[in-house]
Image 1 (cartoon, helix red, strand yellow):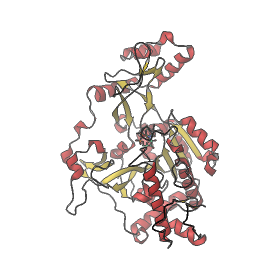
Image 2 (cartoon, rainbow, N blue to C red):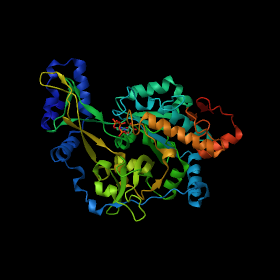
Image 3 (cartoon, rainbow, N blue to C red):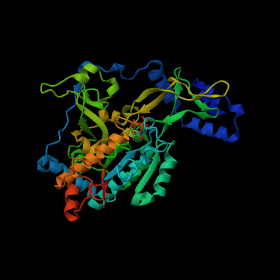
Image 4 (cartoon, rainbow, N blue to C red):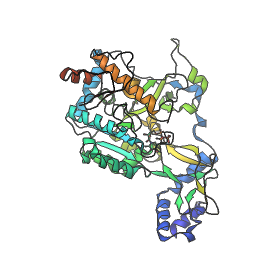
Length: 469
Ligand code: UTP
């Protein structure tokens, strides 16, 4: 068979070693998995990342500089530059030039939740899912800007069906079904430390999602870029599925992106402490890029400016605006523009020679992933703006501790308290319950002040408080 010969010629004939034992259906499944694999790309990755352990070794840290960013003013409403950006962003939103885009293809192993992460109940009072929170924020923006604001969601093979079913079962949380599009990201095979593709069943290759950087290829392959272009979209507002505090379409951010002619913009937060696990915005030889926390030398993490602030303080929170034209260039621009793959050593279940499934206790193989932030070095005028934690960032990554459901709920309650305080409602010091404000009532402090003036409420602090639209 042609495909077997092809795999043999790339030294990967072990993929078909149980062929004789497979049923017709298993054979066709294996062939279709095999056809997904670009063997030339894989050879190259095995050569550079597995056999030579390449990657970031070439980075000259002595030349690394902190990337400049636009600091957030104390009061944005009094800052002419920020107000102008807001106006431009709102205009783009009203004109239907912005799409929301969620990457939700990850495996969410750290959280250990059984199901797509977007279905995880995250809010403090109503236990709304992450997807519901985003849906309501997008719905609020659609109403505010009288605009369609399409929503694209990238899934992966592992969670695609469950994600679509979740939206169907919940009537798309009030959004029109046709205004939400789902597409699957690509997959990559896992290999052992010799570069041999791993089987996780006799007729099944160990495949996994190709990382959030796979979004750019998948946006193109799925026809989503064409659909966006047809709808007149110019800017893609990118965010991750695990962060309910994100503003899915932030007029300030979109406005700055458009106003500065940036093709990929990012939000940053000053790191809370030296070793906070955020990627660092850096400049190397005039090019802006993110250096992962695991690659950043301790002495650079600890370096301080004269005023005592961390020098490399700009941490990435994975919120971007990407120009449609740039996304297309990256997806179709050939090797000059393609994102690099990174290696991750993992424990990968595999079938042994006897055909038994083994679950290793230590890493036995390599997965390949692309990171979306690797697009930044290719961008024109890559802009970085500062935001605040409560207004944009409290991800649910781990089951407990830092970035957990508990810490995220506490942050949501702190945000809502601050909104109430802004309208003169003080929450009693001994208040031991939760507060939740529906995005259909307000999505930020400004809109809360307006909504409250129209619809003030008497709050009973003897239990949980939920303010709805
Ligand atoms: P993470 O890096 O937190 O990975 O993803 P994860 O798979 O969700 O979780 P762990 O590491 O297994 O615990 C950050 C964001 O990127 C998306 C995730 O869905 C999340 O929104 N992502 C990640 C993808 O869409 N595809 C991928 O292949 C990886």
